[in-house]
Every structure is written in C-alpha cells, then in structure tokens.
Image 1 (spheres, chains in turn yellow, orange):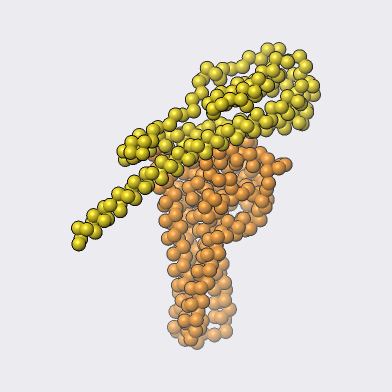
Image 2: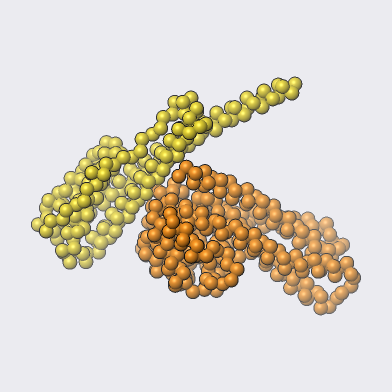
Length: 183
Length: 296
C-alpha cells in the first residue's frame, strides 16, 4: 500500500516537472516572439514619421537633394524589408541618413526654428531609443531562452521537446559606420 | 547575467512571501489591539468587541490590499497624467523602459513638490503606478530622469511595490489607530480609575500603542535598504547606463530640501528620503548608492 502511494507520488512529481519545463519553454518562446513584434511596431512608427519630416525639410534644404533621397531610399528599404533583420539593417541606414539631415539642419536657422521640424526630430529620437530598448529586450529574452536550452536540467527537456537555442539579432558593426557630412 | 536573473526571481518570491507574512502579522496585531481595548474599556462586551475587531481587521486588510496604491497617491496629492503635452517626455521614457523590461505600462502620476523624488506603488506589475515630483521633471535631464524611472520600474518588476506599499499603508493605519486609542485613554483616565485590572490593561494598551509603530518602523527600515540597491541594479539592467542614475543621485544629494508635507508612513516608498538629511533614515546613504553604481 505504502509503495503504491510512493509510486503515485513519484509519477505525479515527474508529470509536474515535465509540465513545468514545457511551460517554461512556451513562456520564454512567447516572450521572444512578443519582443520581436515590439521591434516591428517601433520600426513602423519610425517609417511613418519620415514622410512628414521630408515634407517639413524640403522647403529649406533645396540644394541637398542627395541627402533627402538617401532618407527616402532607406525608408523604402525599411518598409519593403521582409524579415526583422533586414528591417533593422534598413533602419540603421535610415538612422545614419537622418543624422546627416539633422547635421545639415544646423546650417539653416529657419529650419532649426521650425517647431514642426523640432517635434519630428524629437519624435524620431524617441522611436530610436525605443527600438534600441526593444532590441535589448529581444536579446535578453533570447538569452533567457538559450540559458534554459543549454543548462541542466533544461537541456534534457530541450532535447525532449525539440527546442533549439535561438539566434540573436546580429547587426554587423561595419554597417554602422560613421557618416561623413559634406558641406 | 544568469545569476542576476535567478536573484531577480528569488526576490520576487521573497517579496510575495513577506507580503503574506506581513498581512498575517498585521491581522494578529489588530486583533490583539482589539483584545486589549475590549478589556480596557468594557469587559462585559468582550465577545462583541472581539468579533467586531476581527471583522474590522479583515475588511481593513482587504481594502488596503486593493487600494494601497490609491491611498499612497492620495496621501501625497498626486494627479494622473496623459502622454500629451508637457508630460510627453515622461511618458515616452517610461514607455521605452517597459519595452526594455517587458513590464506592462504603469499609470503615471505627478505630485506637487519642488524636491527631486519619485515612487512606485500598486499590488502587482499589472496594477502599478509611478509617481514623480514636478521638481524631478524640471531639474533632471533626460538620462537622469530615465535612471530614476528605471529604478521605479525595477521596484515594480521585483514586486517590491506590493510589499512596500502594504507596509506603508498598514503601518500608517496602525499608528493612526494607536493614536486614537492613546488619546481616548487620556480622556478616560481623567474622570475614572475604578479597578486595578483595568489599569494594567490600560498600561499594556499604552505600551502597545507606543510600540506598534516603532516595531514596524524598524522592520521597514531593515528591508528598504537592500531593496534600493537591488532596484538600482535592476535600473542599470534596463538602461545599461549607470551615469544617468548616478547623475540623478548627485543632484538629489546637492539640491534636495526636506519635504515636510509627505506622511512619515509613505516616506520609505520614495526614491530618496523626502526628509533629506534627517537621522534614522529609511533609505541607504546616497553616497553608498553612487559608489555601488560607479562600480557597475
């Protein structure tokens, strides 16, 4: 009789452990997916701001067509990019093109005094911060997930449930080169 | 990294356990107070008063559990803000930090005070509030304000808010109840001293009334010290930028004047001690916090 209860206890405990790890993988996996969609939301917000910026800048910087084109091209690449990594790369290009525009704006006192322009500049900086934060959280989420996949006892359950460590969001440093501002 | 995460989870469960213990302790203290009061005043109605005191303590605990944040906000006269207009930066910074931490967006409040300060409250991350002073919004730059807000979000994520607010509100009430008891004892003592039994219970009553807030005050003092350090660490985990928080702490050290309007009971909730350089501080010394942050 006692032995039977011990067996029931052990089986119940084992079931709980299996369920616990199944849920851990599900929760951490969802967190990764969710943080990925957060990056997407912020990138979209950023892309939506660009046309307004171009509109407010166009009238002032008539002689810097190439810079404006660079920004619109980068925006196009961002909007049409298929996966998140391509989007983040396009956003980095956009960011450097924007830096050029904001540096140029220093030469146009009228533009610098334009409240609409200033508001957009602030808003773009805010979305850039938010993108950085969601990327950080995305990588943090992947770290937590991968820790679970690679350390005992999670490693046994990862094999059992067929869970593999996920890839970090890698952005090559060479793509974030400094921008030259020509006057 | 991995270890800090485990620490994080440990602290959450510790906070939850402590909240449960606190609630039971408060319940016992209140029932004990009821017991003493019933003996001191009307021994004939002992059971009636005891049942009443149990009902009062349970409803008191339920009310303060679900409304602790509102009570705390009310006691400092905070008002809720939306993300438009002058509070846009405040809103955007908190929103960015929720993205960095995965914590749900808390409700945002502002309180009138020229001091640089802030606090977080609520019973869990889903029902959380952050409140900053007008002084903090005015005097801190973007990165410093972000550091302070990240610290408060750290309190939210660590479940410190539940425990700290419960302590503040429940302790606050105990001191009020004891005060009322003490006052009525004085009035009674003036016109009657019938028997010795009553006098002894009166003595115990006075002792309890005096001791209760002091005891809990010391408990409070012992916990909030560690919590501030871990919230600072969590803030850095979110922002990856210790200089912001360090800058804010330095400005508080150099510029903050004591704020007398803040209730003593809710003082430990704040980012920095509202009474500034008073003795018996409920907060770790600012210098120490800066030192720890500079090593990160």
